[in-house]
Image 1: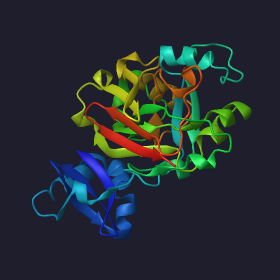
Image 2: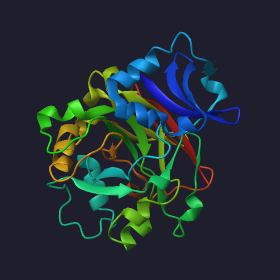
Image 3: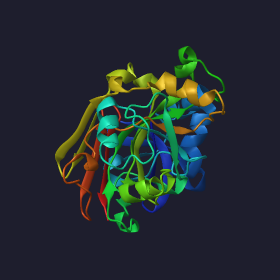
Length: 291
């Protein structure tokens, strides 16, 4: 099931995608957290939505404005730094890896992005909020937790995954370097585009086979298979849940591959009007413009 939140004719709605339409399962204020409620409710909640396929109102995808599937996540977005080998080297050698002792991390590097950084497909990413004019892109696969997870083993990790969504971990590189910790450089309002929908895990036969591509103004910049992660999804869930509880609806962005703007000489920072496009097999395409 592909779950989505949207605006149609000025009203908020939520539902799931069938062909070129959305089956509307929630309207109005209820829709703002409807997808999150389905994630929390799990299989029974999905079944209730699926049962509406023949009776609920439908709207064409082309007629709606898509929002992030979970417009207001319950907690900050968890993110993983330097989680592809080539990007780890690229970032370490860029001069922006402040304080790092090793090029390839020996344990997952975890940071967060504020919930207020989340926007949906088609939304303008406000690069103007970065006073240093060093805005960069980072296409990523994100995992959405479906079951409460504490001290989960790697073998059981996928039992706690609800599904997957595309994220663009937009970053101010100079603010990232200046503050050493990454929260300020990455938590800027609108700097976490997410979407176009949340795809349930049952629709992804092998997540490691998914291929991610990022294009800037049509130019291919990033291309990788999820199988190339340094720390795979079970490792991330097991590591994080050893000391803290992961909650249904938590979003974990798994890291970006080589090809970010600071990897070029000189760096290819984003400018107003630039078009960012992140695609992942079976998950759709996330497009945003820099403002």
